[in-house]
Image (cartoon, rainbow over all chains, first blue to last red; front, side, top):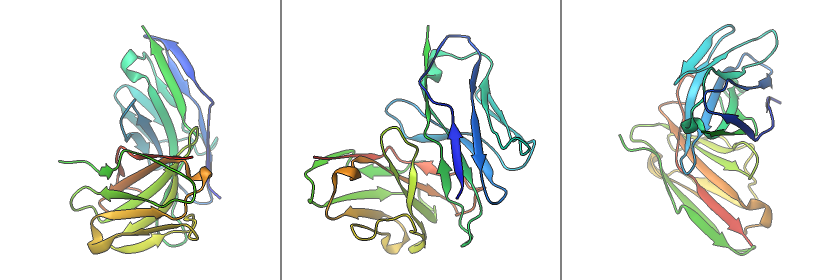
Length: 115
Length: 115
């Protein structure tokens, strides 16, 4: 079945450092790809998404490019802030046999940014 | 607009007891999801409703878990009897429709501890 693999955490960075969180996927169809973020004490929120190859999703300074040839959707940010400390989840949504498109999540990567 | 509401936020029960969780989705959202998030893992879909009909319950342990969405609005998820391995955060999400182009909005979750 479909699956998502993302880099193990936790990741600890200093403020203004460059961030990369790797994500690769396997899917039977042509999935849409997502990054979700969970801030401490809050629910999951959609950070960005891409629906076809070479699409770049971006939001709040974060970017990720849908790479079909490497089945990857790595999350990047040029300069992290303390407020970016959270757990980040890579996810895909593939068209199932019944026509529904459930989200399949990776295990999550905890990011801590220190001042 | 109000977000997805869930209650209770926390619940501690002993194994073999019963428990129920409640979810109120965003007004007008036809699709409702229940996810289980075990510590250190990403959310896993348990059941998806479209209005008051079940679209996907393939990963719901039906011998002990049940869910309903009366009148296509609120939903309840029940576990009876609970096992130790059911300790997790139970997330409810809703979206306008069920396709991958529709963003899923998550509630804060109910943290269940089974002792």
